[in-house]
Image (cartoon, rainbow, N blue to C red; front, side, top):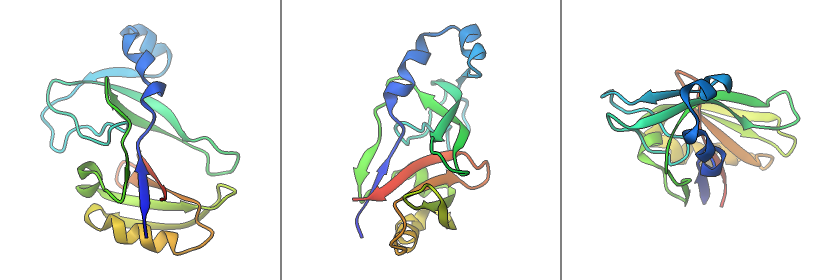
Length: 155
């Protein structure tokens, strides 16, 4: 089965990088400098990890703006100048190396399936979750911090 993984739209974050730290704080956001942790901090736009010294914004983002009990916000990292990841039948390394939680949603944005996933097995989990014909799209989260990672649709 063919699938499409998409990061968050870069246009949603580009204006934030020009704000002062005080202006960011007023919006509940913060500027951070990536340290040497491995893996790095996950940019939810490009679906790549940070390198030491890179500037990141830590923001609270409504990644599932739906009219259902499953509407969701999450703390996420983004890097300036990144382009939105949008690929068919490709899994970015950032997702491959993490423990994930996949959630399937129907046309009414109601959760109809879920699975804990080793990132190296994401393709087979996508196939299992989309085996339910009601599944319109999937959301992938990092399992431990439960932060949003990416959206998956049928391609």
